[in-house]
Length: 361
Ligand SMILES: [Zn+2]
Image 1 (tube, rainbow, N blue to C red):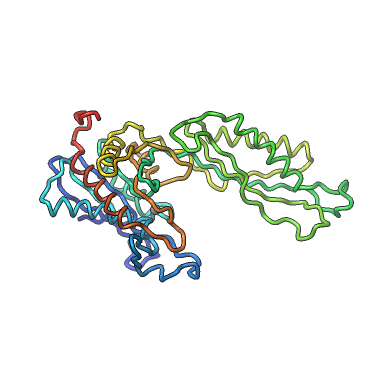
Image 2 (cartoon, rainbow, N blue to C red):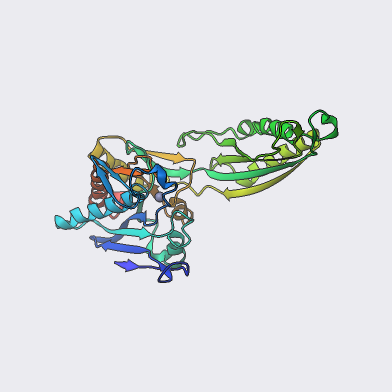
């Protein structure tokens, strides 16, 4: 096992671990399984039925912070390797289990650090599996992510008494007009990509900051936010320019000003091809273990696989989830752990070093 620690003066010992455990195969080509060691805080502890940091087993359920996100990933990869070791099986490809830090807060001390400082570890021919998201039936193989654009709109008008609207510039009304005007976006960026659910880009007004505390004052300042998830087919800059134009147009019409600011701007990483060898290997293993058809899919959110994809490494995100990540009473299912470990073991045993020679199925 190797450690590729990332310096971090905030932690005892001054570094964060990034562990890689190796199971040598018949070839140097690798199958990677990358999971993350860090967990999110428990949140409001009164919402938990038991101590978040003491594992509680109840029937098929394992409760505790991190059981699903992402110790599920760690445990299934260890179980699969242990099964191979117990049976004395040498896989065709070398199996590499990466247990990294810092996934929940940006990966700069985790996968990003590894790719930047130890990029030679990974090769485009490697199969890279990231068990950190999935669907409850275990059929979603995540290969693509939409771009993410979060915008803050600050609308400035003039506050006045509600009985004399002509003296002011009502920013709440301006916000309403602006939000309706922004509905043009889904018509102007109409492409559909059936990999994704939903298949189109989405442009949703979400948060609205408080304005005036009383009913009889016309507000002169309002702030709201727009959450855009944009298909990889579109350029985020182009979307932002169009939003700016719609905002300016509406602001002029209503005689207010709008200040636009990007809170988050994350272009989508290149997608992993839906027929990439890692996707085929997973789909075959899912069929063998669960008897279901694994499907390559895209999601609106972001995962750590984007860092691999930006580095030209086609990664697939997969596991069977209970959808309790980051929630109180987070749990994972023992039966999912066993089944998912079997899926990984099937991938390890069936992944030929040269994907071209893999029989088509
Ligand atoms: Zn995670």
